[in-house]
Length: 435
Image (cartoon, rainbow, N blue to C red; front, side, top):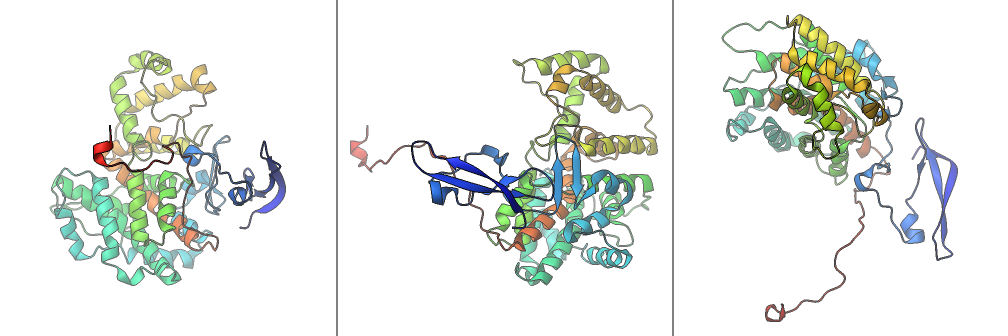
């Protein structure tokens, strides 16, 4: 562990003469963490932290979040700078390798991704095994997990070259799988990748092109998609990333680990938030109805929630939300949508909420999901595809975190402890003696 112990904290166990001094490990930035690895061995106790909100499960050099200040850094670079100036492929290289690429490194990496965009032809049959109305995330879980049955040449996780090839395959193939899941659902032919296009352009092409007519892409929409992918590429030790790391700690192959992350992302509390925002705006209906909706949100006896505001980590304005808001206007202008009721509703809701003492005191600021659903809806994505698109972006983060974990010499199989509150020792009784 590279964190240095600059100070310590001492725990005294009441009623005993036992005490333990724990080193406080300092990272390069952020709060120090108490190293409790000897806690049970010395004091015979565990810590209790439901949801792991106060526990560092690993050491990582990839992403840093300061929720109080609204800061998000990828390998030290502010998300605002990367979203504005970098391409998603540059960001993918950064997350995987630690630094932004030079021109030659970027060309080689980009070519490596393009070389793996195709799917094994037999995988086409997997889609036919799903019902047409299957959720895209169900398809994504199944097909991504099945990749390990087709690519036996890259399953040795101790081999750096295997890890490199697996990273390329996952980053390149998940967009193809996602687009094909959509095409299968709507009954259109699968569109094979076009490696003359950029990563974002290729994804939009596979989603929207049809054999009957030429596909005309939009640079503005492609740039917006590239930016959306960048904003969602990684977000520290969230639920799905922790799932990938936990699965990977067992030695599972990378395709299985990413499939596990996709399953975790599927939860509405994680990857489905932007869909919930659209549903909320639809239920509000009009700008005039916002005050009544706000009142119901603040009513403790009401089950009404303000979706797209607040975050488990951010206690300030989500830095991604500001970029998404600007991107939203760019997309609507490009599509010629001058008067979008959802955007008008969202803008007014945000204005009112940010001036309301209740939401300000509770630190409920807009998060990245508040505007992303409006953008994706305007671009023609059905709401069922929102979380799948999230998975396309987050795959590079999952792979980077998985790779970092595998290469960590202190990596152990994940095994959380528990606070047992069940029955004490009981003995078996024959059936006829049970009351």
